[in-house]
Length: 183
Ligand SMILES: [Fe+2]
Ligand SMILES: [Fe+2]
Image 1 (cartoon, rainbow, N blue to C red):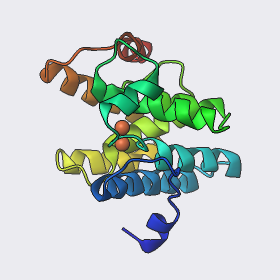
Image 2: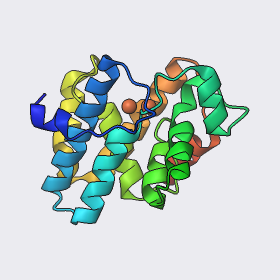
Image 3: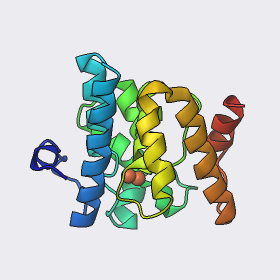
């Protein structure tokens, strides 16, 4: 990973991330920056994409008490609380871009109401090159994305849903609605 990419990640002062997590965050953000350039996004949208990459896992390594304090989702399992917790905390600190907040809030589960920013984060989180599985397939999808954003998104939602089912994890209504929207 380039020094430049790592330097461009500015975490909030309250972030709780290990070094390993920071490396993931940096890879996700680099991928989003790369796609933003390829897609020739406006500077505002490119900044949204960069910021959701940099902040999406800001509370990923926080303890359960802190996550529950911020997330405001009493019935949710702990592993999906870091998205809503970070979104709430960013909002409390004055972040007001709806696309940025919704992308971070739902990045683990998916949401059919997303625009491009939420979709791009959901894909970058899964396709970043540091994950050890299905490397060739994921690298292909990451490379294909600028020419086929919607096709790659459908594929990523499918792959993530397959994993959720295989692991016997619950499917949230928003995840199911996202899949149904793509049929
Ligand atoms: Fe996450
Ligand atoms: Fe992540």
